[in-house]
Amino acid sequence: MPARERLSAAEARRLALGAQGFAEPRRADGRALGRVLARTGLLQIDSVNVLQRAHYLPPFSRIGPYDTGALDRLSHYAPRRLFEYWGHEASLLPVALWPLMQWRMARANQDAWGGMFRVATEQPELVARMLQTVRERGPIPASALSEDVPRPKPGMWAWSDAKRALEWLFWTGQITSARRTTSFERLYDVPERVIPRKYVNAPVPEQAEAQRELLRISARALGVATATDLRDYFRLPAADTKLRIPELVEAGDLRELTVEGWRQPAYLDAGARIPRRVDARALLAPFDPLIWERSRTERIFGVRYRIEIYVPAPKRIHGYYVLPFLLGDAIVARVDLKADRKAGTLRVQAEHLEPGAPAETRAALQAELELMASWLGLQRVVHARNKHAGTRL
Image 1 (tube, rainbow, N blue to C red):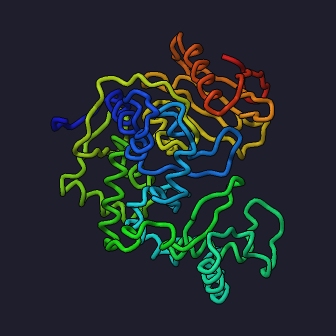
Image 2: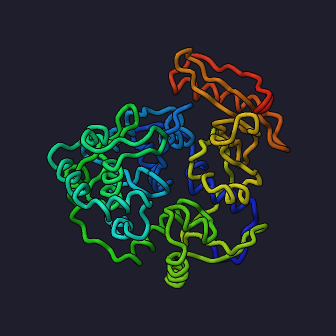
Image 3: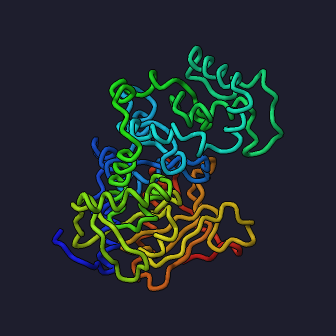
């Protein structure tokens, strides 16, 4: 890409889409998941399963119908290709990033949540006992390790002290996730039985170099980004990012420029290329890396998108689990989806056109909904009216 000082908004949008793989034809061949992971750098995990688990959806958006078991094999079995850790929230990351996350593991005293830190500080004997038990019995779920520890009151985040101890050990890298059960419960084990020896025994880079490499990955995955965008991708500390980005600019790894309509300076990978056109068609999950940073989504696409899972139903604007619909290089609609597996139905609970959506939006969206339904093993797509969440297109 020739040197320049400024990008148009359209160029920035195509850069962002191209970096995430949306400028390429959809192909669910044997190397497709590798291409997706090379583009995204990680996949966010989330427990919500109203449609499909979050980490399965970004590959579908980019390569179309694929075997989710192939992704499971990368993250569950040897030869292990992915591991679970705190990347962008809970995430599946390529095993090559294990050494790059050691600085975060070492900062647990500064960064880990209060409940975990409290147990580690006040009950070190419990932490030691949990670690020994995992060594002896792993892979093992937290539910099998809490029998002799007082149980908490019911609630979504009502963890026992045993679970907090395990999460502390997970944060510090003393244990890791061997895999998830069908009920999404994590099975804990020690890293030497999960992570390939090549990476467990690899030299650990200094914190500054690890952060620089994570920012390089972020820059390639984002295409063009502000400093905040780059920091958010792997949730890096703001103060550290403020130091690392100028270092990467000085080294020639990042270029600083301006983007039409952006208030903040922008950065891009020195080897970035602007696609001439993007002709995508995709439903984007709420936790897709293309749109998970909502202010960036608004800057790139001119669409204000928020997840409304925790909003009371009568107050929702667009719905519970809403996926923006990408057509060409624009977000042109959004749909609230639910997989009714018992009825074999993909339920479209609400549909909304964005201003300026082209005439072909409805037909293209219907084709994508039918493709998704087939991939999910559902026999039909049913559109419904919902007075609280919108009306049909």
